[in-house]
Image (cartoon, rainbow, N blue to C red; front, side, top):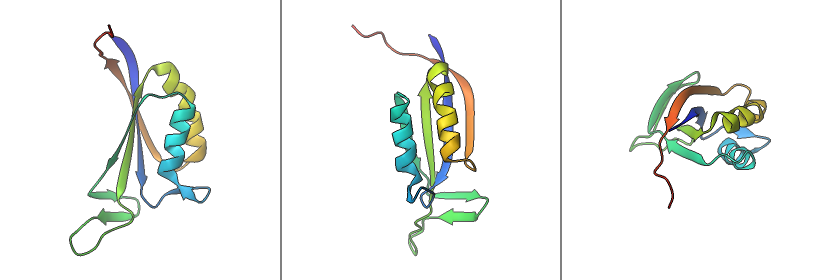
Length: 106
């Protein structure tokens, strides 16, 4: 087993960085930093500083919650985190230690 960090970034579909969708910019930063375990989860409803965001049958919101989850080594996460924070200074970001468990490659 190897220790690592889980990095979770909370965004909205409407967030942007330099007139581009924030999600695209964050994925680009993760790729530049060499992060491997990156997943994007789209929420159906959320409550944040701007109120409730919901997807219902009556209206389709363009501002649904997104969660970008990154799992990698401590070294890679600590390298990437300042780059991400610089681009998203007001984003909510959480980290916690994890154990990386992988089957050895043959």
